[in-house]
Amino acid sequence: MTKQTTRQSKNLLPRQLGDSHIRLLRVFRVVIESGGFAAAEVELNISRPAISIAISELESLLNMRLCHRGRSGFSITEQGQHVYQSALQLLSSLETFKSQINAINTDLVGDFNIGITDNLVTIPQMRITRALSALKHRAPEVVINIRMMPPNDIETAILDGHLHFGVVPNLRTLPGLEYQALYKEKSLLYCS
Image (tube, rainbow, N blue to C red):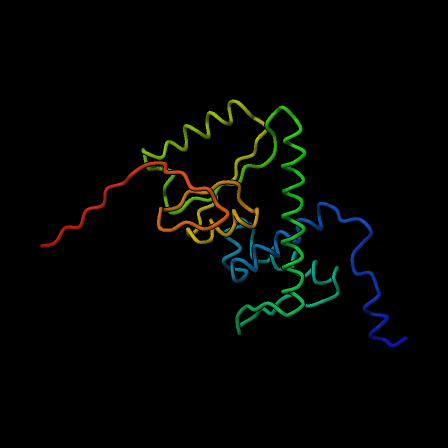
């Protein structure tokens, strides 16, 4: 048995994945999707050193380099790309499992992930604050997560299972998504 074969057969992960491991994978996913630590800092609402520590812990746990970071910029390694894809599958499966188990229960519980473009929350026609307030009153155990994202990212996140609901401008429709009009908005162009 060669040294490489021994390394490949070695289990990198502990027997059981715990919340701390899932948290590291979630941080890694956001770092990759944000394109680096600086942008992920805003999304995760934690400091850059804390993000760096989390990524270092994950790299140590997996015994592999997941990304290059430094003055030359940020990039994902080939191994990091494989870990990222596997993490997406795992996190999506966890969300699916939570949704299915929550559906068994008659009480509404769990996370409700919403993607919204720009500042649509504050537009009076949206009535989203009233709707979310009514939902929270009816189902206080539901955790509502709202993310501001570009329209394409919202549609992709819904298809990938990261978001449950999204609000986007009616520019085009993607197969696999159900669209429903929420309101009409009039735009005017003025010239002088």
